[in-house]
Image (tube, rainbow, N blue to C red; front, side, top):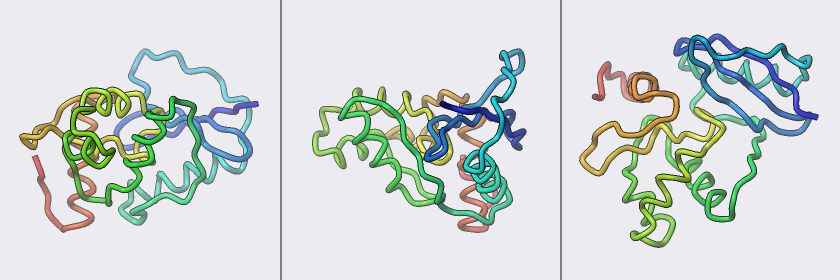
Amino acid sequence: MDAFTYYNSPVGLIKIGGTETYINEVTFLDEGSDRVNSFGTNPLLLRCIEELIEYFNGKRLSFDIPVFQKGTEFQTKVWGELLNINYGKTISYMTLAKKLGDPNCIRAAASSNGKNNICIIVPCHRVIGSNQSLVGYAGGLWRKKWLLEHENKVANGVQTLF
C-alpha cells in the first residue's frame, strides 16, 4: 500500500508517496490543492524528506533513494536518461531525443519528460529548450528557474543562470 507525506520546501509544498521499497511520487502542490492526510510515515518517506532537505541545503548533488514509476517502455527510457543529467547541468529536448537514439522523437521525449511523477529526484527540470530557454515544467516555470539557479549556484558558485 502506498503511503504519503508532505514536505514544505523552499519552492512550496511537495507531496511524497511511496511504498516500503521505493518512492513513486514527488510532486508540487499549489495553494488550494487538496491535501490528504498521510497514511502514516514509513522510513523510506522520511529518508526521502531528509535527502530533499540536503538537496535544498546544497549538501546533496544526487539522490540514493530508490524510485519507481509506472510508464511505457519509452517513458521509462526517457526517465532513465534524465537520471544521467549531472547536477548543475542542462540539456535540450533535442539532445535528449538524440541520447534516446532518434532525433525525430523530440515531441515524444518532451511529453514523457512532462509525465515524470518524481520531480527533483528524476531531474526533468534540467531539460530546456534548444535556444536555452525555460520551457515546460509541470511544477511551473518559476520553480524550474529556481531549481536550475539553485543547482548552478551550488555547483559553480554562480548566482544567476537565466
